[in-house]
Amino acid sequence: MAEIGRNARAAAKPLAIASTETKNAALLAMAEAIETNAAKILEANAKDMGRAEEADLSPALKDRLRLDADRIAGVANGIREVAALQDPVGDVIAAWDRPNGLQIERVRTPLGVIGVIYESRPNVTADAGALCLKAGNAVILRGGSDSIASTRAIHACLVEGLKSAGLPAEAIQVVPVTDRAAVGEMLKGLGGTVDVIVPRGGKSLVARVQSEARVPVFAHLEGLCHVYVDKSADPDMARRLIVNSKMRRTGICGAAETLLLDRALDMATKRALVADLIAAHCEVRGDEAVQALSPDVRPAEEADWSTEYLDAVISAREVDGIDGALAHIGRYSSNHTEAVIAEDATVVERFFNEIDSAILLHNASTQFADGGEFGMGAEIGIATGKMHARGPVGVEQLTSFKYRVRGSGQTRP
Image (cartoon, rainbow, N blue to C red; front, side):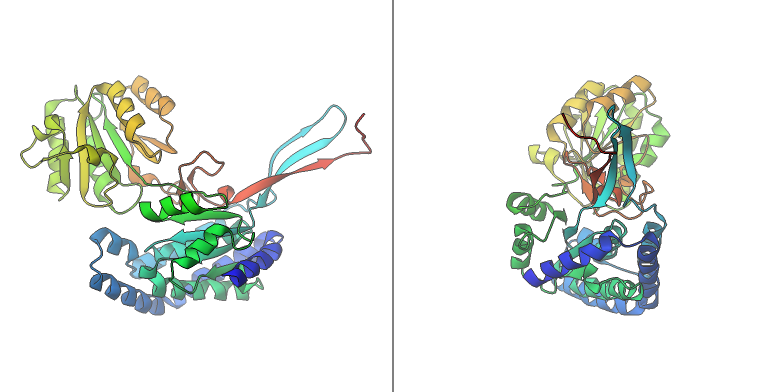
């Protein structure tokens, strides 16, 4: 692990000054290599899926792990999208002149070496590698043991792309062991060679990272996402959005976990919303008011309001309008993503102004909580902290900045 850290630090130096053309050439070669080696990647993924079946992983975890031809094509296209993004390195964020004649610029610079720790998501190998490279950073990837074969197969394609562009192969490294002790070493900073840690996985992993890390962390502990349906909502729109927010992919961090229904919402609409979820094979756990809407609703317990199911389960309750929704979200939110379905502009304005989550949506599915859907290319994760990287972490968020000051002989009196 110490050698991996030293190699990453050494690779970070040429990456920081690599031209946009060189980085893009590497990225495009990576995408081509992934497509060319799709059969090998699928073969490796089949091994991981076989172990997942033996371990009896949940359907949501197996969905995260599974690759097919379409998903591999999506991985390759995601890398091409990153290549098409504007290079953030060297971008002048702000510039101003001082009365004494000094000219000051704030300029984006790479963070340096980024450690990414993730579970059961082989696509993160490509996403993280591509984003870090575009932002001029070296990256150390520690994938989960469940996806080790898939991770190695994808990583081989990334290295092929780096070499073809004349960049150091150590710019993107994969931790070759599944031993949890390797995570501990990364969290210590590998002798000062790691600048930032990005965890992407379950609550226990992220909690450990936030607890033990001795370097800065871009992280979200969980995606406890809420959808509030106001009495002013368009009923047909609400029905479409609720099912999509919950059921499109239940295992992603942007999946809705709690449904809040305005007590003044039309009774027929409330019944339809619950019935749609149940018809989509989603288990609904509700308070007494929601239980009265359907005999198939199970009683909700206090723990349900703070549970990220990552499965076909949703908690639901009635609230007293926007005030009740704000109170519930304020108490239980993980500050990831919240959505409001409403036509009342005053309700929407209060929702946007009074909730401090990283992503807020109006009349749109929570499943849009994704860097790719934001036009940022792939993402390395969703950050919910208060640091400069908040929400989808893309190429801009993987940079810091420095000040360039130009003078003409000024001295300070």
